[in-house]
Every structure is written in structure tokens, then in C-alpha cells.
Image 1 (cartoon, rainbow, N blue to C red):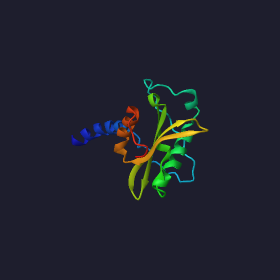
Image 2 (cartoon, helix red, strand yellow; image 1 turned 180 degrees about the horizontal axis):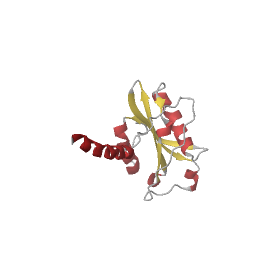
Image 3 (cartoon, rainbow, N blue to C red; image 1 turned 180 degrees about the vertical axis):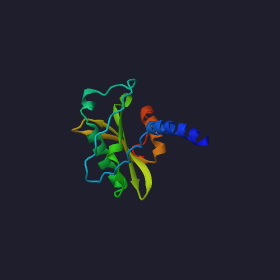
Image 4 (cartoon, rainbow, N blue to C red; image 1 turned 30 degrees about the vertical axis):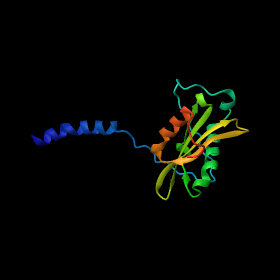
Length: 150
């Protein structure tokens, strides 16, 4: 009798195994000389849209600019450009760029606020922080109260 009960459970387990989510691919670090992979911009429709000159920035260009600007803070860090995010902060006319990185096993992020144009980018902020500090820096940028360097 126990054997029949177990046979009934086998198809259920097989069905459940097919419903399990696939594991996410692990990020691959980019070398300091590799060009960053393009990333998607946030799709929040409530966010003001960038001006025409600001839209001329490509996501990959924003990530590369931020990487170059913050590289001096941790020259041996590995940047994960494929995991970078960019967000248009319309009220401040800035792009907020966040790039995950690691150095000696310690996770951190490079952060930049970039305005201007692709031909003449203006850095309103560049620095690094722990991942938990990103929201605070973003809020400070939105409020217009931030240091030039984090």
C-alpha cells in the first residue's frame, strides 16, 4: 500500500520540479580595459524624461565615464559594468550612475551624477559607497544637498 502512495507522488514531484525557477546567471567581471556592456534604463514612467541633449548620452558611455572617474579611488577594483544602472534625475538634470564593483572580496559601488552633454560631460558627483548607501546618495541628489565626492 505504501508503494502505491509513493507512485502517486512521483508525477506531482516531476511537475513541481518543472516549475522551479532557473538559477540566475552569475555576473562576470569586466576587465578594466574592457568596454562596458550596455544596460537598460529604468522604465518608470513617472520619472521626468531627459532633455534632448541629455538623451545623447548612451548608457555605455555613462558607465564608462563613471568607471574612468572613480577608478583612482580603487585602481585594482573589478567593475561589473554589465550590472550597472543609470537613472535620469529630471529635477536635477543629471544621470545617476551606479556600478557594482569588488576589491579584495569587499563589495561596493561606484556612483556618479553626470550632467552636461556627451561632448562636455559635467560630474556633479563621483565616489564610492557600500551598496546600502546608494538610496541615501540618490535622495540627496534629488533634494539638491550632496557633497561633490562621496
